[in-house]
Image (cartoon, rainbow, N blue to C red; front, side, top):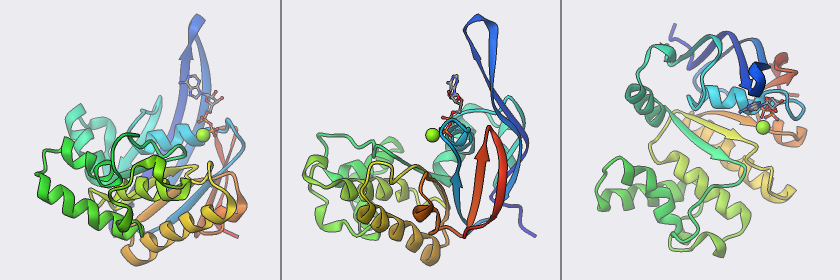
Length: 231
Ligand SMILES: Nc1ncnc2c1ncn2[C@@H]1O[C@H](COP(=O)(O)OP(=O)(O)O)[C@@H](O)[C@H]1O
Ligand SMILES: [Mg+2]
């Protein structure tokens, strides 16, 4: 059987703060996520959801325990190996869209390719393809402030897709959007999961949003309190 895309074992995280004190955030988290799953993460504010997502995204490291990404113990990787694994496997979507304001949608989407040294023509083609996947191709030349919040988030999802990653991590991607727009964004994620088999892990506060997922993991005080089928 293939290794799960994500496996965490005995994961603990604490932050060191001033005065030599340590703030515990995650306690003994054990979780596997297979390729192709659509998982919602819920839990009260401060329960460790973003900390957990940052560890899954290799943006932060556990204090103890193991994280295997695609079968690889990420603690064994050097800085460059980790960056290249992250770039090839993971697309990130954030609550605040994080688009460059003075740059057209197309160029926002293509930005990761610019950093990767991909030539202009290919950047353009692939960015248009990614915008097509989120239904925003005709807004390729628009600036972020000419787009609605939902459209901006579609640009951000297209940017997350640009390296054709098998995994998307989204931390409260509908947190700044109204209900109707949130549903549209969730339909985009659902389509990417169903039609392209992209694994989606998404943090949300809202049950209506979590319903789009197949599996619901609930954190309370840094522990997994529930892990099962989404209702
Ligand atoms: N860099 C940090 N330094 C110290 N404490 C932090 C840091 N990041 C998060 N925390 C604390 O960790 C806890 C969990 O935060 P977080 O993972 O952001 O929760 P959530 O996303 O569920 O709201 C909170 O108590 C928060 O204050
Ligand atoms: Mg958070």
